[in-house]
Image (cartoon, rainbow, N blue to C red):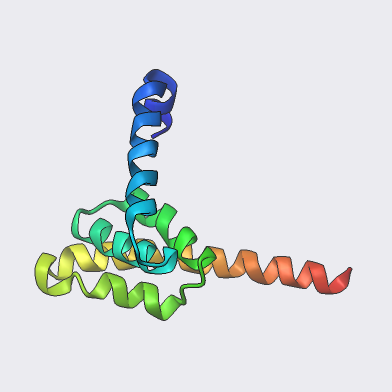
Length: 111
């Protein structure tokens, strides 16, 4: 997206507007939307999307177990290779997010 935003900002903005419209249309909660999006990215080898949406899902209150479950639901459709690829990528970002949260909480408790 960085290159699209730099080289074709109006196209990038149109994409963001479309995504926003879809989110606003959805009667599902943001956490549920993010978990569904993670399953879709797992099915399409969208590793960059997994990075982004793991963090967004966790910010919306998703647990590690819920994120793993959302990705594992893709297993019968996309197979073990793509599911493992998505899960490996998600775990990197789950762990990083949890570490960042622990550091923030630790810093806050020292203040």
